Amino acid sequence: MKKKALFICSRVPYPAYSGAQIRMMNNLRIIAERFEVDLLCYGAGKLSEEAMQGISRYANKVQYFKVGYLGFLLNLMIGFLLNTKPFQVNLYTFPRIVRWVRENQADYDLIFCMHIRTAEYVRGLESKKIAIDFVDSISLNYENLKGVVKGPLALLYRMEQLRVQRYELACTRSFGIKIITSERDRMSLVNAGANDITVIPHFLTDIDKSSFNSSMTNHFSHVDSPFILFIGKMNYEPNVSAAVFFCNRIFKRLRCSFPNVRFLIVGNHPSKTVRALSRIPGVEVTGFVPSIDPFLQACELLVAPMVSGSGVQTKVLEAFRMGKCVVATSQGAIGLNWLTGREIKVADSENDLITAISHLLSEEGKFEREEMGRSAREYFTRYYSYGIVRDAMLNCFYFIEN
Image 1 (tube, rainbow, N blue to C red):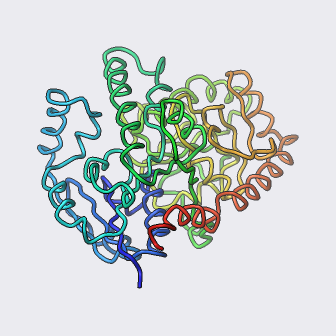
Image 2 (image 1 turned 180 degrees about the vertical axis):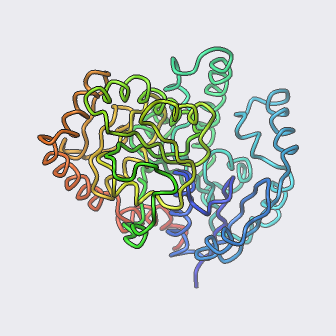
């Protein structure tokens, strides 16, 4: 008979359009192999039938709390005025959900929290039955934003960084099981005084060839033109900064040598700043698309010109999964262990990025582009397949199961 687990996340995990939601659904899928799982999540709207169906593939029951925008605002005010917890932890912590968890926690052998935003629901409970997926080191993310974000927002980010750093360390002492996506993020917490954190990388569902039949014409006005691709949730600051940097500093110069090449920005919720980039000749912003696979299949290469952020970039793994060539900054390639140098081209200066991309777009660079794609695909199947990640994660729960 399976033991019982409660899986807590601060947003509805399905449909899984963002990297965070992909991670939630993947963790849920793995835990459901060994545990009977109930999922707790919350949001400002009604839980859709589509979300319920997707979650129910792995969760026995769904406990959904509808919380109004006023509740989020009140939580944020409490964070400013009454405590020193991270603003994002205050924002996502609701007293009635705390009460529900405390009243029902005895029914579960494992309580699994996604992100520090859900940690308050279980802190103080028996440590050996509570687990947390930090996903990334959020304090490292804020550290990487220094120099990128300026003005009053920079001061707010600095304040949040200090709060998050203290809170992450406190969580490593409260939770019996701690996991994170990359060695670099793990070491960021270890250097702050944490210990016993296990690296569990992302995995992605392998290629769905049926999605290749999806048309791009509703989103892309020049289907036959060669294009460079960037994917991600486009109101997330590291993605916004990367897109702005690439458009203004790299792509405009590339067009001088490759006047027909286009730059396609694909992803949900493009911010006003991102939408404005479509005014640059050759740049198109799609917004939501039902599947990114057709775009990955058709692109010449994917770029990850990150100037901030933390953790492993899901966009890079998505391209590797499809056997596509990737050009990235060091920040965009961070967290990828065991690289041989054949899977990805890393360049940081503007000139080096332009030189690398220009070569790969040229007729002379076509063979190298294809070879990089094959190496990337091999790397993906060796280190980021479902079986590899599943075994590593379930090993963390061995003593609970037994």
